[in-house]
Image 1 (cartoon, rainbow, N blue to C red):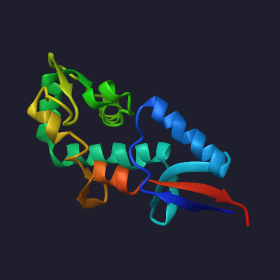
Image 2 (image 1 turned 45 degrees about the vertical axis):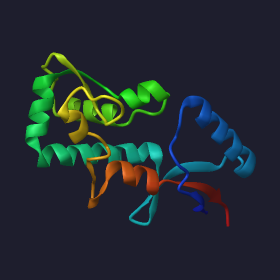
Image 3 (image 1 turned 90 degrees about the vertical axis):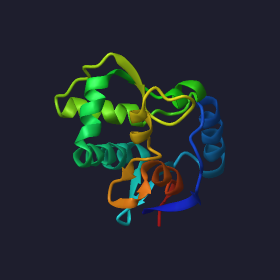
Length: 162
């Protein structure tokens, strides 16, 4: 019994309606024994688990390598938002990852501004770009951004009984 890749480069998650349509298509095509995720060190990791092992860890490493970004974020932001997610209805991964990091380190935002995390539309702050998944390096690969990893390495697998 093992996970078998049936589709690679499955694209962005899209909004809720688009996600539901794709999931219905996959259910029709593969039954309900499919998952979206990544192969990390030759082992399949679901997308939900990769949020912790990849997304969160990438931000954790960024803040360790760039403590001034963390300091500026804490001093500037009252709250964080992802305008791309708000406008498109797509998944917001970076804001929850940053909030989780702050919580795990017992840190709180102390500023007065809403700081956008990402590069969609107009940015509230230069920090928006520096903390964008288009800029943050993925854990374990300084030559690839978090967004590139998240989109390019994502695959659809089905469980195969042998």
